[in-house]
Each structure stands twice: as structure tokens, then as C-alpha cells.
Length: 171
Image 1 (cartoon, rainbow, N blue to C red):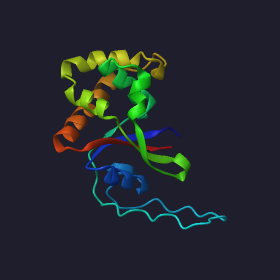
Image 2: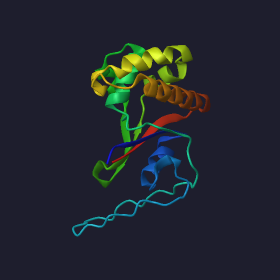
Image 3: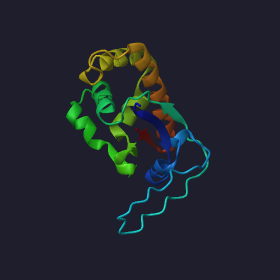
Image 4: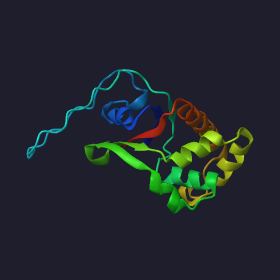
């Protein structure tokens, strides 16, 4: 089973973090929550799951492209900043099941760079990104061009709304 990554726009960290409790992530409007795991040695009551609005967020299927290392490399390609600096701003804002499902806030620098990315440059960006170590030099530039274009549109929406760009990750 692979990594599931859905990128989405949310108005706040609180709204985005609540998605971690949804069975199907941000694109699921069913309102069904992940069942609480019980432990024989539970010493304290867990925090209750927040109320999650039964509405689907606008999402982009990341196709297994994860939000820290691979997106950090995309940020480095887009901005010219070293990869190590790019990954420092990504924050896990919610996690359940010992990290089996989490929500990550993308860096403001990456969101701005995506929002400012021009259509004609995206193919070049995706080609350079596809050849990085994070894709073992064998990423498909056509698939990544489509992904970058969809993420750029989502980033523009986030910027226009004064919202953030997040990734729901599930294993």
C-alpha cells in the first residue's frame, strides 16, 4: 500500500487539522470520522475529535508526492534556495495513529512560488524536479508538469483567499 497525499486549501490551521480525523481526508464530505483506537493501558482520556464540517475541500491528488522532502525539493527548484532551507518551514499540524495519518502545512515560500509560477515555466520546473534525487532521477516530467500546474492553481486560490495550503497524508 502506498502513500496517499491530498493537497488542499483551508482557511486556518484549526480547520486543516480537523481533516486528520476524516476517514477519506479533505475530499471526503461524508463526515465519517476515524474510529478511536483503544488501548489497554490508556492513562488519560484522549482529546475528542473536533467537529469536522461535512464539506469537501478543494483538493489536488498528489499521487504519492509527499509534502516535506519532495515538496521541499520543488521549493528549491522554484526559488533557487537550498533544499535544507526549504524543508524547515513545513509543519505537521495534526497527527493520529502514531503518524499513520497527518496534516502538514506547506511553507509560505513554496505557496508563494507556486502561486507566482507562470504556465510556460512549469514544464521546465517539472523537468528539473523530475531529475532530482527525491525521484531517483526518474520522475515523469509530463505527470509532474500536470501536478505542478494543479498545485499552482490551488496555491493561487489559497493566496487570493488569504488561506493556507496543506497536505493530508495517509499510509
